[in-house]
Amino acid sequence: MNNRLKVLRAERDWSQADLAERLGVSRQTVNALETGRYDPSLPLAFRIARVFGQPIESIFLDTE
Amino acid sequence: MNAGDKPRRPYGLGTYLLVVLGVGVIGAVVGGVAGAFGDTPGPAGLAITAASISLAMALAFAACVWWWRGIDEAAREAHKWAWWWGGSGGMAIGIVLFSVLSLRGEDVAPAEIGASAPDLLVTGVWAILLFQLAGYSVAWAVWWLKHR
Image (cartoon, rainbow over all chains, first blue to last red; front, side, top):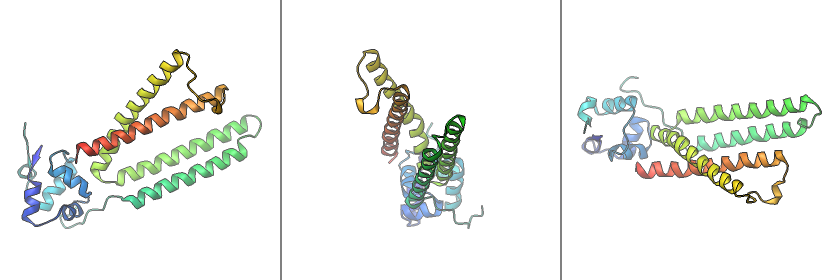
């Protein structure tokens, strides 16, 4: 699943570690999310949406 | 959770080492109890050994579950994947290897482990556990390599 995490993070000038701190996950998880190699759980997806102040469907793009 | 709430940090290396140490202490205490009282004649010795090992297993399992629930989401997924695919795969390889060697009549175990039925049984248990652990470790590393 593709996502706009890297773009949204760059817009805010946050490092992966900054975002990880805000989400309560490790930097490795943020990296795996950004590369699209790991799909988050629903609770984590909601946390991401809250942190960026955007709806989930504008962050995660269904590629199917 | 409110938008302003700061999420809890996932458990790190310190907590992991604490759990390993705790499980080690549990193992040492139980080993001491089983060693001191396990030779008691009659069913009492057997009961003490069974009860102490069961208690140790339950405590260690509870500690691992507590730790696993507190770690990072992706790390949790990696352990779950490694537990199933790595553990099962390692066990399968071990069983195939030992079965083939046994069926061919090869002397699988070194002489130092003994030849009595209990000795061979315990060796088999530990050997399969080692295969599972090896499979677990490989699968865990593969998961992280695939998700970097």
